[in-house]
Length: 101
Image 1 (tube, helix red, strand yellow):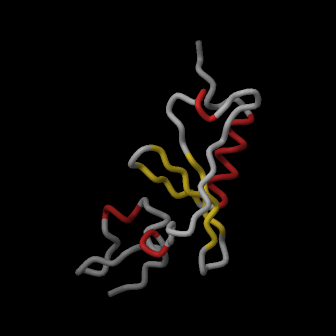
Image 2: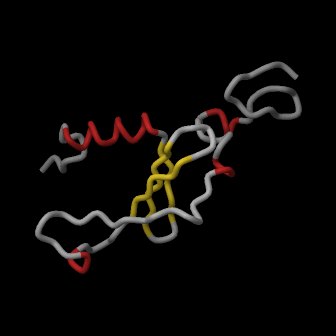
């Protein structure tokens, strides 16, 4: 096998196609959400009951020294690296996700 920093190895030594674009493949099974303190963001003036499809967020420290951000809604949980989360917040503040109409 050859060295492939950051990529998973398949039987021939190359990166698995499924893991090639997954920058969190190495820590995905290690993130422990069992003790996460989930919070439901609510806009000023709203109550939690006013939120139609609520989502929750948790900041989860990991043994690699980073704090990952977990976002869950219904049966789906997404994990963001600190840099991904900063980029998301910057985009939201910049109006990147505003509806175009």
